[in-house]
Image 1: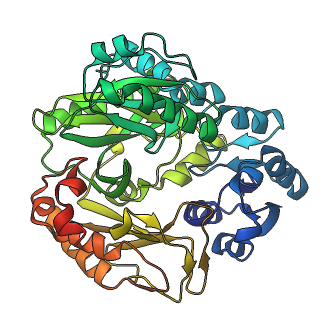
Image 2: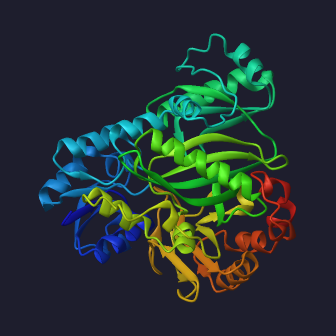
Length: 453
């Protein structure tokens, strides 16, 4: 672990670099043509060019990444999130090359990455699972209508290999079913190389609540409390917080115990997140999926627990047993909220807005304010990658105080040269329903007249 290559870019690469440097490790960044002058490149000890701007030819290029590790003498690879972070074949190649893989085993990634297999594992571990169907391979849809009727409408068509809201479409009735399924399969085949889908019951007024877990690889696992990620657009998160507002303590405990049981049953190693759908009316919850990587929203968990999740990942991968980290030692202090600042135009269906950051002013870190970013003023936001500019995180003793702090932080955020969602975020935080904690995954659609005016 004396030299770590970060197989990613942008904000998450900068985030991993900070923890690696704090542990005294040398670091290697990788970059595409589009990222030659990026912040993560400047922040690492070394940097290696790995290909053209298109991710498929650079950040998803396994051979280029392994060659970069070999040429620099890197001894470990941290995948960040996105790209190859949950690719079991890549993890296996890293290990086969004699390098340390900072993450769960390839077998664990494979078991949880396939959504139907993950549902079976969760059910076997005693977790409640949303009613769903068997899988349907690309262009093999015999029995689709009968399976949909058994699941019940409305339902979601979901790509088995999808994630982060990608490869998921809503179907209100049978008339839409076959066309939507075929479109989802085609998209999944292009995006993930796997056109397999399954059907899942859609809960109209649902909350998205997830449990941060950490496994030690030997059957021990702990949780680091929950995060509410219900404020979403296009099934992708925009605002997250911990603790989840208004969630009964008994439900919190049940979900945390269930998530820990699943991680322990898999002998899971490292940081992971068990995601649940929660009925906003009844608080009944169901297993959704498990992400076998660090999450975008991990900073709010770090704020309330005082633990550095990336540091823990690196230390565990480096051979430390972390025997002193027990559930009893994980304490929660205060409330934290995170807003994702995107280069996008909310008034135009949140379409990305590439261009030059003529002005890029973020709130000053400190006094309960944290800023994670991978860009600087003067940088150009390209159309090739996720348009997230920064994460603004606020931590305070109470939810009301954290939201007040976030209001000030967003007021201090000034961006010129491109469209951003900063005004939209300000309106979400100030909305009376959000202030009450009346959050659910349809929040933006329900309040769009206020949020998108």
